[in-house]
Amino acid sequence: MRLFKFFGLVGQEMKKVTWPTWKENRRDSWTVISVSLFFTAFFALFDWIIQLLLNMLTSWH
Image (cartoon, rainbow, N blue to C red; front, side, top):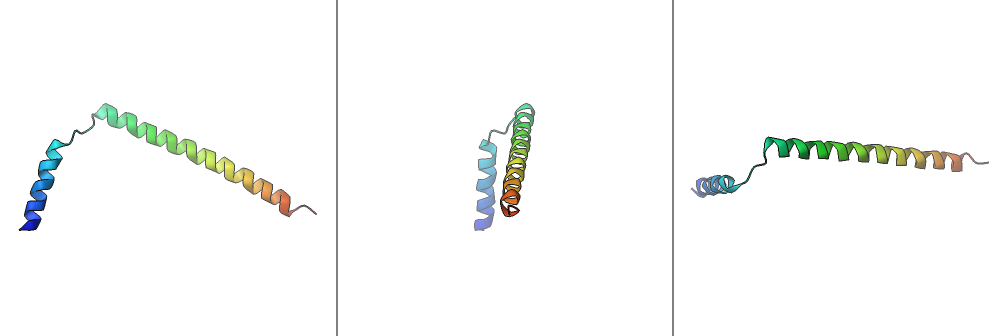
């Protein structure tokens, strides 16, 4: 019985939620995608530079 009460309370709370509009959802999704791509490129470049420096240090005779 407590499970039914729990789901009833969840349903009541879900009715109080303000869901984003399609425009807000699309804007926020593009923001997440853009930031993810930026950080992917940033860390790939950073990794490449560190790897280059380490290769130079280890091949130094």
